[in-house]
Structure formats: C-alpha cells, structure tokens
Length: 126
Image (cartoon, rainbow, N blue to C red; front, side, top):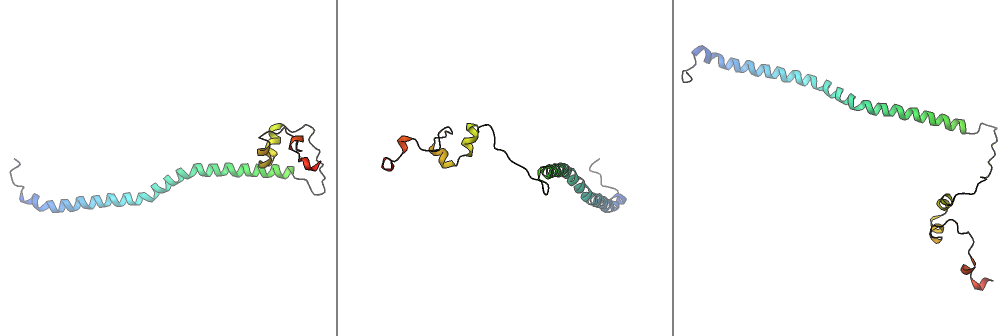
C-alpha cells in the first residue's frame, strides 16, 4: 500500500497544507512572544518581593533606632551628669582597652601596672 502513488488532488493540496501548518506554528510562536514580557515581569516580581519585604523591615528598624537615639539625646537646655563607674574594670575589658603595643609589652596581661617595676628601671636615673 505504501508503494501506491498519492492521488492527484492530494498532491495538489500538500503544499497548501504545509503553508497552513507553517502559518499555525508562526501564530503559536507569535502568541508565545506576546506572553513573554508578562512571564518575565511576574518572575521579576516574585524575586523582588522578598527584597522589598526586607527593605520594609530595615526601614522600620531604622525608624525605631532613630526614635531611640532621639529619646536618648539630651534636650536643649538639659544637663546630664556622668558619674565614674563604681566597679573596677574587668581584666578582659582593661586588656581590650589598652593600645596594641602596650598589650604586647605586657604579654597580654592586664593586671600588670602602668609604671615599670624596679627591675625595669634605669639604674642611672636613681
């Protein structure tokens, strides 16, 4: 059966059918191209949404911190007194507060006094 030639009318319609198929494919591709910007826009909005939410959280936190700073700042004409800390500084805080060279000289010890001990003193300056 496969060896039988196509009828004449079918052979005449074959190019027309090919053209119609091609036109349908072009229409389908055209409709997909028209949908593409909307697809990209939706995808962009989906990815942008968490960033916008994070931005809103940061703006709210910023506003809260600004209000806190505003409350803590002295008002015009207000006088605030600062009293020295009653408790001695902890060794770790004292060590961290030291300049790096002094920290190195003391071998990382904060309990060593600021003045040199007797064996460090220059004997010519007695």
